[in-house]
Image 1: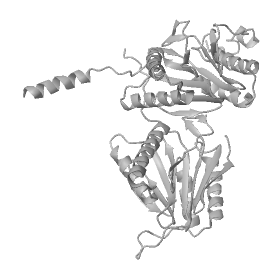
Image 2 (image 1 turned 60 degrees about the vertical axis):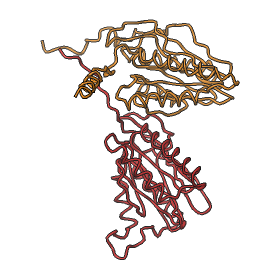
Image 3 (image 1 turned 180 degrees about the horizontal axis):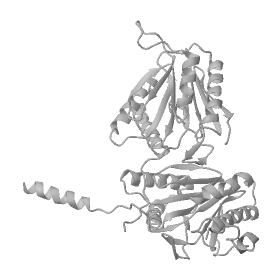
Image 4 (image 1 turned 180 degrees about the vertical axis):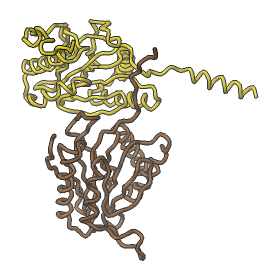
Length: 223
Length: 242
């Protein structure tokens, strides 16, 4: 008889949803704070949003241990950048670094699904969405994680981004005001929480604008 | 040609390295919570060889340095290896002789990296670890899994404990729990686990860590009650067709 082996996987999906919306002079980054494994909740208070530089924030879902490793790596690279250039990295530069970092592990990927939000060098809101191996795109709004299939079509419907195929290229930032964007994000998560078991407990919203960073929280369903 | 062969033999010897693909002797749940003055942690003393209860006096709660307490479930030999790593870590930290010492946050972070590093080598340490501690008035309680998933919370539990004990803890846990209340709550959790987790045994330890240090209780048993009428003749009402 062959040994009944308890098998293991180097990956897990700890769930969670992330949304980012770019406006003309602000950026809203939001994620829920639930961390799960299978049908179990590990904790209801885990922040998925990480400040990478003064003007870039990353929200990540997927495999928490990989996400943590990725955050630590980016923090280390950003520290080196500051020593070499005596300034904070810009959001577009951080976006490229994140892509390269993910692709470097193309054949043993970081199982992390990221949205990067921030302000570009002109102070305009910017959002970058990624897949696990580093393909990325600058967009006006983005969404990743377990509830992304529920949230993305709703954002598309509400925000109607200009096609990237249009010539001349149209600006992708949303026309919403900061308060409208925050409200939209709250609605997205309230709805996603109803149907996605991996999204819930609490919503963390980070707003980035010329004044700096502001944090907001909203309670979500705990079931 | 020769170097090629040498390389091949090196490669093949590399192929023969054994990695832990499944655990041998395992410990079951650890439950821990924050209370008024620090952290309380409970675990039973069973060591299972598959479904055989092989060892009955395994200490799975250990003090680490001055400010931390470690509880482990999963492969017991891997736990002992982790204890050796931590002994070295604490020893080297001590040798600075600078009056500084690693706190629970640092030890937890270290464990996080060790576990994640080993999963990256496809040679995991088959444990779920709970780390609690107090340093400079700050309470800390965290968990790390076999593949490096880690977090902090006010109360944590490994394995079956996450299913059976945490709902009780979420219901009854308070920030200002006294020592007596904390022990009572942990015993309530351990009793549920004893009834429902087949690899749990009725011999447990509860450990306390505060600013003053670690105290681990002597092993003791919980009072149980098996006299429910449903237990008297369990096959009543479950008659076969024969």
